[in-house]
Image (cartoon, rainbow, N blue to C red; front, side, top):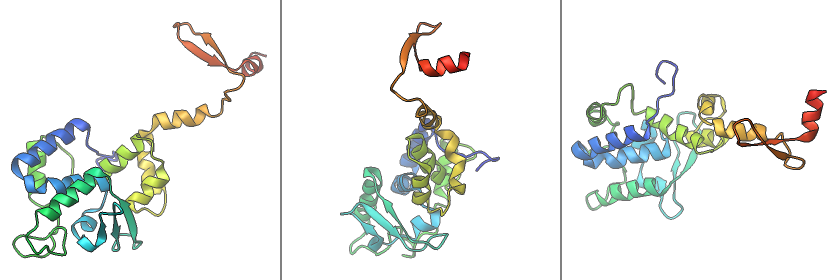
Length: 209
């Protein structure tokens, strides 16, 4: 959140950011792609072990979450590709950690260093790693996914935390009120602009009485 506003990447910003990461920090690109396609918190993502990843079922299982409730995250093709790239890039025999430190072998603590530099080079302001969760959630809502599902994917117990995204689905809200108008009995007339407009004769008669 920035000044009470949900901050998420536009498509143009994502394109610039991906280019900056590929140019300077190519090995970290799967980190970023996995983040915006799963919506995991930083601690959840960087604490992953390979035993939590099920490539066959296309999902990963989180056991230690902020609210204490385990959750399963489905993986789309981009998230799967990112994980496969990470696994193939590890030395043999592979460590049990998805994000090991090359220096210590322990789990990385996050995106410190490279991500802020990539943001600067991409000229993206007022954006942090946590905003990747907002990008994930916002794009789901704009694609028509209902808020309950978004809450489940983010790991929220109630809808309160995802109501901030509700304004991003005006088409979905318009579709909801359109359901009040039954298809039966609707007639099409010409409006003043020459475009077709649907009217219900019974409703028109009631309103003009």
